[in-house]
Image 1 (cartoon, one colour):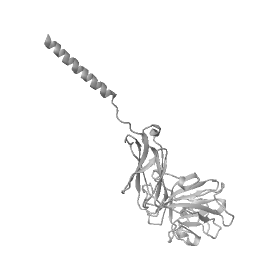
Image 2 (cartoon, rainbow, N blue to C red; image 1 turned 30 degrees about the vertical axis):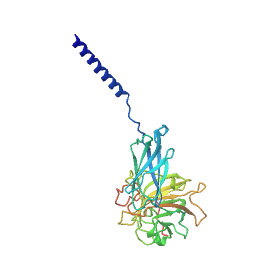
Image 3 (tube, rainbow, N blue to C red; image 1 turned 90 degrees about the horizontal axis):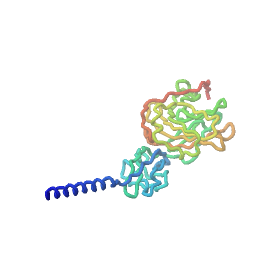
Image 4 (tube, helix red, strand yellow; image 1 turned 135 degrees about the vertical axis):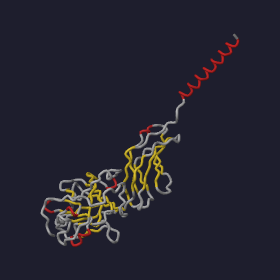
Length: 317
């Protein structure tokens, strides 16, 4: 009988210990982890600066939320802190010749961090002044070279059109800007009418409308998801707001080329400024001087883009 009582007490003690441990395990919780940011995008501000923009972590409203941390690779960059409540940040001190991966994590005060969200981008040279390209009837030049021998953009007349990266055409009261090969300055073979020389290629990957400032145009993988750029003229006859062209310019036989964002500005609802015969458009250009470095774009297309031509009779200038 005594043996049975002792055995019963042992079983009761063991069961109580098990229930206590089980209860303790069910009430224990892990430290909370913040939710990640979303919609991470980037843009090149200048030759050493990339701006990042994102939607805040949903965890920002929680008391534990501390900050965002940016890590940059490749290189030996220290982590960069973005304060709570900030969703746009300029990352400075970046050499232009490299493409970087920017990874952002949301961080709690308990040290826990979210899954990182990343974007690839590179700095690009920004011409911080307005560039004028003139109408067809003007003698001041209807084409632009993104980078001349002195490292600056230059407006050139038709006498130097073989060097044009982009051109403006205003004939027949139709206002267009874009790829020389798709313009009426060239024939159906892409050669200039006045000298029978081939035009440079200008692939247009994307057009963003209703833009007020070039620095407002962010992107992530959007260009990369358009594998079929076009050589075309963009009609702005009825546009009243600025727009941005994402382009690659390159000579025949050298498809690596140089990428750029070209901002066609508007003032007071008008894009073609001034008075005839010297009306003009004002451009701002973000230009990647390193050939083949296409911001966030993976270069999948190593041949000239298809040419979309107007159905208008070409005119020798």
